[in-house]
Amino acid sequence: MEKKELIYEGKAKKVYSTENGNYLIVSYKDDATAFNGLKKGTISGKGVINNKMSNIMMKKLEAEGIPTHFVEELSDRDTLVKKVSIVPLEVIIRNISAGSFAKRYGVPEGIVFAEPTIEFSYKNDGLGDPLINEYHAKALSLATEDEIETIKKYSFRINKLLKNIWSSCGVTLVDFKLEFGRLPSGEIVLADEISPDTERLWDSETGEKLDKDRFRRDLGNVEEAYAEVMKRLSENS
Ligand code: ADP
Ligand code: UDP
Image 1 (tube, rainbow, N blue to C red):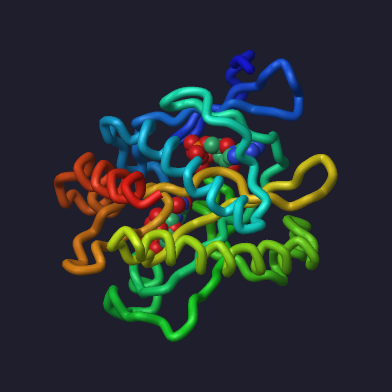
Image 2 (image 1 turned 45 degrees about the vertical axis):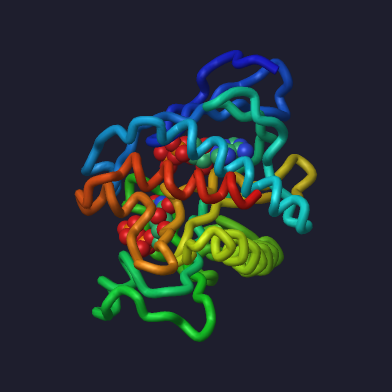
């Protein structure tokens, strides 16, 4: 299938319509942003890595019974996906304290939780993606109770699966963000991407950060970190 019209340009991807109204083509860019778009830059080669990595992960999750939007990788940067109506909630699962969690609650990064946590942000750039709870999400009709239950169930299962995949690559999955969408049938499926842009990944031995925090915090070797996790994943799948 081919790109018809650019329907949306986001911070990390372009989204195109196709001749079939049920499908979209997402095209991964090298553009990087952080702090709600305040910091902007380029991570050379990121689009290719995120496209490939996200597709590997979506395929692995599908094989384990998680429905996803993935259809077919079309090229280095382009993937055919099922068009969904995105549930405007960013779902964040955490295994270890880091980032905004550490800041919000005044704790150091690196506390290993006995059980994973889940939180939701209202996906709304104008408001800066504020933290939201399930009652607020229902009150704002962002999702139904059943949809929220399904999203939670899938998210914790995805965490177990991703943790195992990364662990066999010598990588610790600290936290990550997921987005879900509705197919025309109403079925909830995993959408968007799974990549070092959306996951915190630490080397299991050294604790070295191998994700977008290298860009956010100006730690250097950003491209190298993306390439390293991609290499380890390719070698282990
Ligand atoms: P952002 O919108 O946060 O800048 P991106 O640059 O990644 O993010 O843009 C991709 C957009 O496409 C996001 O808004 C995401 O919610 C949306 N999206 C991802 N997968 C699908 C899908 N299968 N159907 C429809 N929209 C999708
Ligand atoms: N995350 C994301 N998109 C967002 C916000 C967060 O992909 O808009 C990911 C982020 O990469 C990290 C996890 O979600 O893996 C938790 O992020 P956190 O809430 O700590 O926020 P941040 O430190 O990114 O502000």
